[in-house]
Length: 260
Image 1 (cartoon, one colour):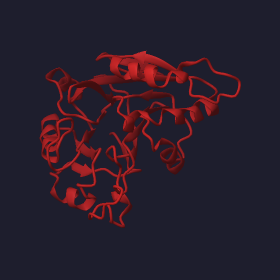
Image 2 (tube, one colour):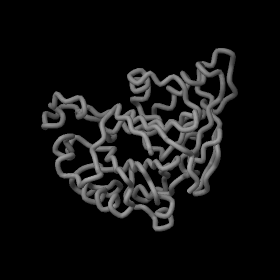
Image 3 (cartoon, helix red, strand yellow):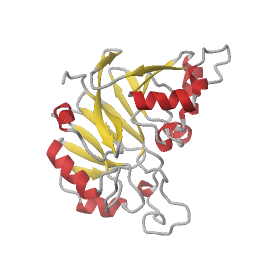
Image 4 (cartoon, one colour):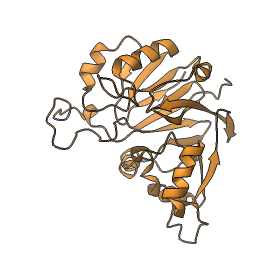
């Protein structure tokens, strides 16, 4: 893996599809006064070599960008087409309008087919008012590509029966909605400073990692730091941190990290 240099990470959201607090729930996480237990839908920003990469566009994207004053995006890296990772796609029009340019979008064949079928208006030519997202789709598999001097490595993963993608830039990797990591993808995850890893809940799930499964994969990958993401309200911030092994932490919305 060629180095891109230091990578700055901003976690826009670390919640699961329902977000936290969950509607109508009074569990310890949902009733907590700690803002680190308030989780919007999962999305992240990776910055390297002056370029800003947005991972996924969930339904909370506009609020996340306002909260963090995110005003520029150079490319969008999609993991998979579930609604909590895609349905904020219309909010990309703000970046097209601010930048007066189309946004390159990267994903696998499954991902791009959903954009074409569900959001065809995002693929039209721009008009003078830039009142719609204007996206340029790029299909990727397992081969790295370059954008603005930054090497971007797709990481093939399994999300139940779906083939999806994680992403690596420099020594930082983002793996959400994972149920299994193929053996062929493990060499792409060597030498990480930061691993952001799906950790849905305490009990098992057919398309996600449980807490113990996430710990097991994290120990196998052996990043310097593993940050647990995409969590339901079953995992309370302080309680999870108390039982995670050394080198692993619970993420929170707005968390910032930097690779070495």
